[in-house]
Length: 388
Image (cartoon, rainbow, N blue to C red; front, side, top):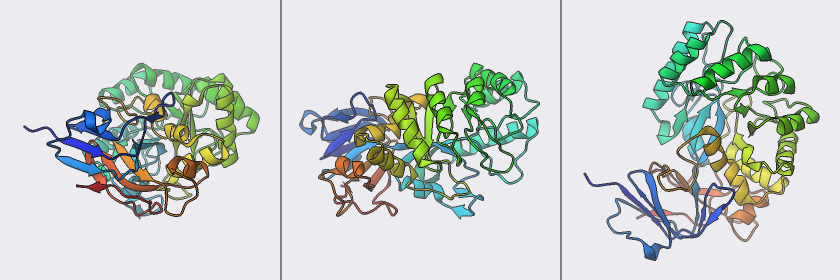
């Protein structure tokens, strides 16, 4: 059977997702059967026999963006906002991978142990079997409740569950119990996130720095609040006292987001910074939320745009142990093609983003297949790539 060969030529700039080398040399990218093969100077490669040929027209190629914190329910529908096709809209914001922090908005969400396990396994399955608009949704993230025992986590892991929903959104509110369950989850390869800050939905509560530290999750969920942030000294304490991922979200406190960024930079630990939206939520759905966070952290956080983009793909890829989000041979060929927005200030895309402007998305590609063309949500780009 003939291999699927994607060739993208005439690329203006390649962003890598790797903070150590955020910009790569090259004007051509080749992927075989949905995996990155080679990139570099077009004249050095065999670009014949492409099953998909894209002329980038000089725009920038980057790994697809990753939203580290969403609350899906089923398919491309959220009852939280009575909205259909929110995932498709998110794809048009350059996001190709979504990670659940718990399917907490499911009406009648079961809180008994049998029911919560059943829903988690079902959620994992239906997003494994159905990818809305091609987007990869890592879901099936149970919220821990009193009564769970070690074997429950083994059963979940054996069934394919790899995530816990936000610790603190269920009945487990004390650090000692939460730590025991997080340790059980980690033993069986399940990654954990904790709610941080004031209550977000009925049934949630304050999770302060002491409980975050005691619980010891892999990711400090919305360290800038979801929505209400902790006091500054507690945020700084978390940055200094933990090795966990520092997740900054769109639906949080912007000032606390900048405090987290600046503290991580002082600690020389920007590799811990990852981005999410924390939507759908009461504040709505944010199709451009990750792009907005990149522009905000770059412009107000004095961070080069090429580094801020790494917060939205490569950093999350490493933290979440994904096979996408970074330009590396063998990784999934998930890309966005984007350019400076029309009439935006700045001499190029990176300078424009660092001035606080959103780029225009011209195309998304997932597993080597084109999944969307010109974005219906971003401002129009100066140049648009074209499928030949």
